[in-house]
Length: 321
Image (cartoon, rainbow, N blue to C red; front, top):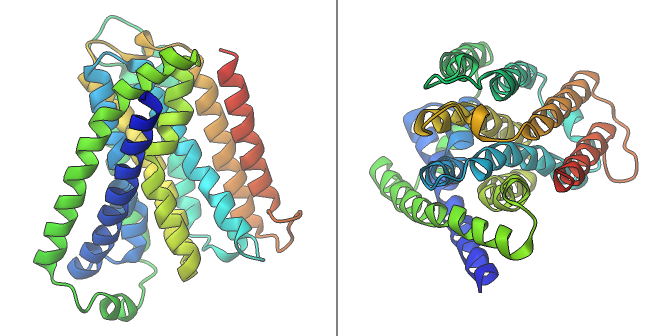
């Protein structure tokens, strides 16, 4: 019964997430923000709304392992989705993407490093850890820096304007809010169901949070990735994945703010393994992006094989905790 309830919530998140992501894109076009900035932040944040509300619910229900595991696991799944996008095209993903994403990867690596330091060192008796607190200003610095960088490479927005010609700003906003409402309601139910699944299956809260809950809450990102594959919008998909990862790192600060004490003190050090895996994934994408090899090994590029191998390694190590 718990599994069916979990799958039902997953379906709601999928449908509502698609609506939120689509109308978030419409709002970006109508407000003139542009797809470059929209892919990295607006759609990235929008499709990460399940993580936001799931983390809120998990922390308030005193489930810190699921909260932290979901944030890290969701970012892993975002990288894993890039391998799917790579497999659907004969040319490697990183050979088709713009090298402008190197800045976003660098900023994500710094955010992940700060998060990892917070997990290890922020174990004192204070309300917030020093490194966790640093996530707040650095995330907004990354937002500002990326916006300034994007302005160096102006895009022709005519295609976007024509694509959304039949939508009004007010209508798009209403539909966006309706989708977000369903998304919130479904995400609030997720931590409790995950805790029951952990107890019934014996897998443990950390594994369920890092992989099962993370897989469900990244379904909106999956729909964006598949849509991007059909449209050939590689930069939109990659920007969405990196933007979601940066926002998820920032949410660690938010979760720490809600918790009664530093999260580093409440969760096991095993989550540091997930942070290290994410740093390696970011490095693999960065290498592929800068080298831009045109060759593949079977259906995946070499950097995509590295991401897939790292994800499987993380799953295996997590089961052994």
